[in-house]
Length: 86
Image (tube, rainbow, N blue to C red):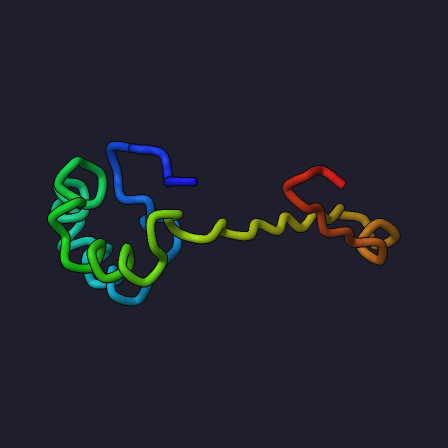
């Protein structure tokens, strides 16, 4: 299944090292003009990542949410929640 068409780079959430220099404060304008627009198709890093991951796009980014309470009794029972809610 092909990745859905979008207005920004599908790899922007993955934090790849080849994209890192664009996400500095002094170059953030470049990221807005390239990574968050249709211009991402002309980005060299996008082309490299697209070849690496194919038409399916990037793998999903795992998300782990840690919930903790402020009282000592509750802190002993810290739980991690998965995005599925289970």
